[in-house]
Image 1 (tube, rainbow, N blue to C red):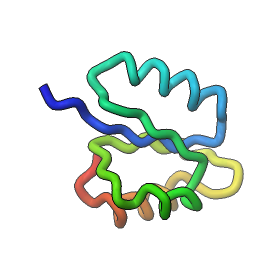
Image 2: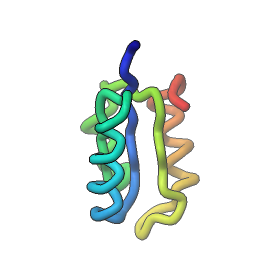
Image 3: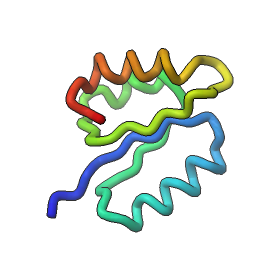
Image 4: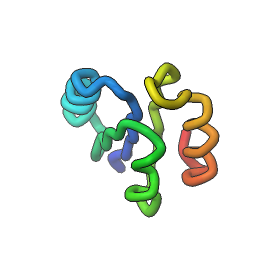
Amino acid sequence: MNKKNILIIDDDDLFLESISLEINDTDFLSALTINGSKEFESIKDYFFDFILIDLRLKNETGLNLIQEAKSIWPNSL
């Protein structure tokens, strides 16, 4: 079975650490966590099967990030 890559975007470091540990114990290959779109540039060459975005971020809205992520990774869910 192919393991899947997941990207998690949230501004709560404790949540990111906790969810990453849980997800990495599953069939996902990696759970990369970032705090917002400013970090998209450094990871744009990666492919993610799934993207989980917090809708209530401190400095930007999750809805805007969904649009930006979709333009970078159009085949991700």
